[in-house]
Length: 147
Image 1 (cartoon, rainbow, N blue to C red):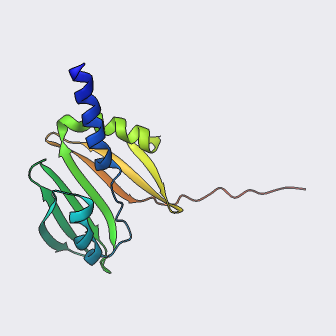
Image 2: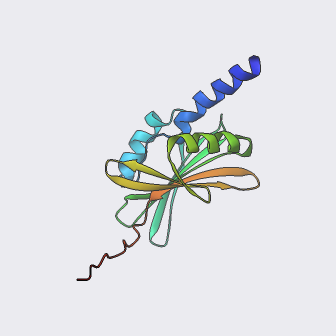
C-alpha cells in the first residue's frame, strides 16, 4: 500500500514537470521574468551566446534539474530543454504518453492555441532530457482530380 501511495505521489509531482509552461515564441526578457514563478525552485544560472543563438540556463539544485532555453537572433525562444535524473525516465515516459499524442521514436505532439509543438524524450547515460520545439510543418500531399 505504501508503495502505491509513493508511486501516486511521484506521478502527481512529476505531472507539472512535463506539462509545465511552454515558452516557445516568448521573448528572452519574459522567460527570465516568469520562469521563477512557473518553475518553483529554479534559479538563473547562466546566459550565453553561440553563433546566431543565445541561451538562458536555470537550475534547481534540490531536484538536480536543469532548464535550458535557446533563442534566435531576435531573442525569441525556439527550443526549451529540461534535464532530469535518469531514474525518472519511466515516469516521464508514462506522463508524456498520457498527456500528448505519441508519434513514435520517443516523440510526442502538443497542440497549444492552434500551434503544434514536438516533444522529444532523450535518454543519456547520466540524465534524461525532454526537448520542446515548434513542430516543422510537413508538406501536405496535393490532391488532384481527373475528369
